[in-house]
Image 1 (spheres, one colour):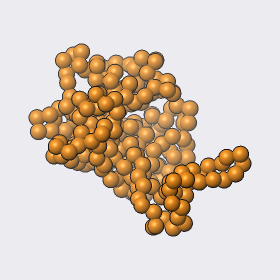
Image 2: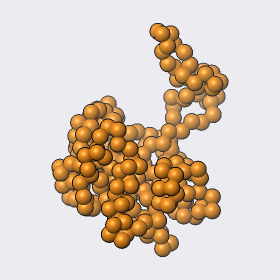
Image 3: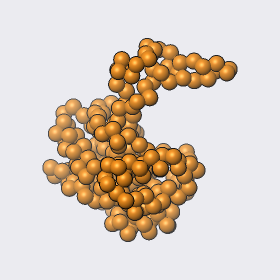
Image 4: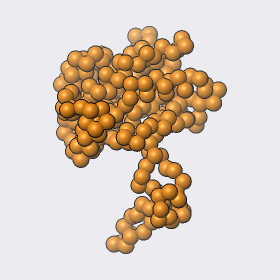
Length: 237
């Protein structure tokens, strides 16, 4: 709870993964991947509830070991490649709503972005609460090195600019900074998120993260990179 307003952290973790099977509970630096996200969420001073939404009994068991709530298994129709994060979040909020629990803030915490620092979630909530007159949501973003102006696509075998409307530059420092929403946290006022059906409502601000946090795990190569970053930044074995 922050200034009398309740907050929930929702960790989505379906069992199926084509890019890296079993990734959510795959061991990384001594604990299952999802454990890193649950631990950071439970350290928050403001999250009243940390819930894992999963369709997998195996993931549910691991999540409970790390102290998360797992009061339901996600229905199969919300555990496909095409299932949206918003549908998953709505399902979780509906579950708590049926029990009479409402939350002013909703934080989506993706287990595939485990490089959070202890205070990231709380700092984001504090910024959003303090800037209530201006913003309804806050999203973690990292500056990208692969700038959109130099991205290419292949059309009929020919290399072309991916975004022709962007001025072509050859030096990274000549580009206006571009950012990617790495999944450290997406936090929104629940009412606005549900009304606009997005974690990017019209009044959305940014929370810049550090360079080493600019990773999401989708395949084995991402996994290996994040594992190496953890060992380097956090001095893990």
